[in-house]
Image (cartoon, rainbow, N blue to C red; front, top):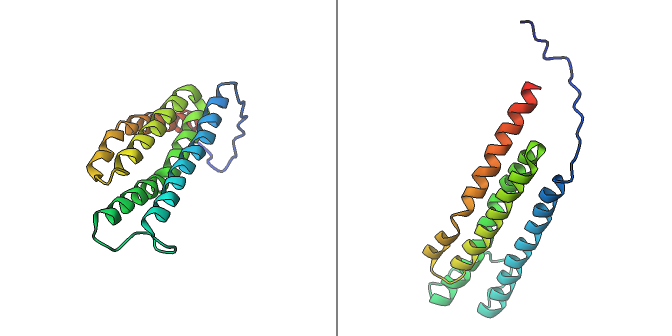
Length: 151
C-alpha cells in the first residue's frame, strides 16, 4: 500500500448539541478556579502573607495552613492544561462521556482543595476519585485521535 503523507486531508467538524456539554464543563472549570483563587486571597489577608510571596516561609501552624490552601490552588493550575486538552480532544468524538469525565474531575478538584485547605495535606486524597474522570477523558481523547488518524 502506497500512502502519500504529504497530501492534506480535509476534515469537516460538525458540532452536535452534545458538544455544548463539553463547552459547559470548560466554562464551569473557570468558576472552580475562581472559587479556589478567592479562598487563597482570603487566606492571604487572614494570615498576612503579602505579595509577591507565593508561600509562607514561617513554620507556625497558621503558615502551614496558608501554604496548604495556596498549594491546593497551585496544583490545580498545574494540571489544568491537561484537563482542558483531554476534555477538548475527547469531546471531538465522545462529547457526553468526556463531559461526564470532566464533571467528575471538577468535583474531585473541589474536594481535593477543601481537604488540602484544612491544613492537613493528607486530606487532599479525598478528591483523588477525580482522576477517574481525567482517565475517562484521556481514553476518549486517545480513541478520538485514533479515529481521526484512521479516517
